[in-house]
Length: 282
Figure 1 (cartoon, rainbow, N blue to C red):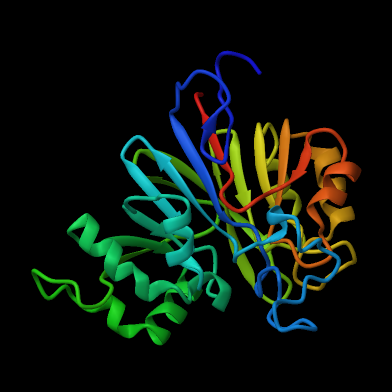
Figure 2: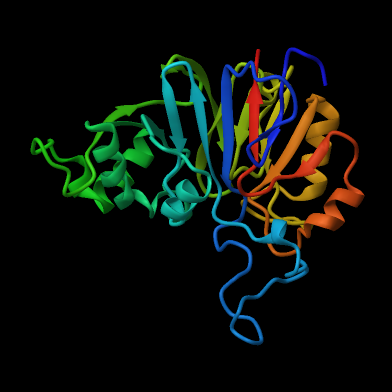
């Protein structure tokens, strides 16, 4: 590791702290998490994942990105409260939604506590389809603020579209169009970092926008093919093409055992872990 970049894992700095941007993987699991509800004893269905390995316990996929002017939350899944507490995230300053599936939005009501901490409504960025779903399912969160209290979430929306570059909290965010099978999702690229959850394929134009990455966090739900999520073979093919320095898998299901992946994956590719922290100095 060179002196220009420090990579943090589980909050511990590997080298000198010259952080300009911090990414926290709040959750790295699929829509039902790992383990699934159920199992022979009711304590969870782990599939092929070793239940004694704590890095196999995964909440629903979400991240935060902290830049010059605050912290951006990407998606408000049903595990949001637990994730923010576990990762010691003190404040959220803005929210960006990748899409409106339940595992990415159902923690929205916890935004009211984030409003109280920030002392203001929070800006929320999403495309038109996602905003329509959010305002239909959570209409109370988008009403004007009844000052001075927050008895409900209060969000002020900005419509965004794939292909745009937007400035949020001092960060230039390039919005990526992603094919999620029966719907479209937004990926994001900030400098040489990209986050691409809930994607099964990329069109050539989006692949070109993913070239030259240092660190890529990417959907990899399972080993066998899936109709809405990338499988392991597909992700490895993308990696061979795009050649990011480091690739971290997210949105993983119950056949993606952490130890097996560590032993099998090529150099530069690794499974993500809930609570993983990536710090960038340039």
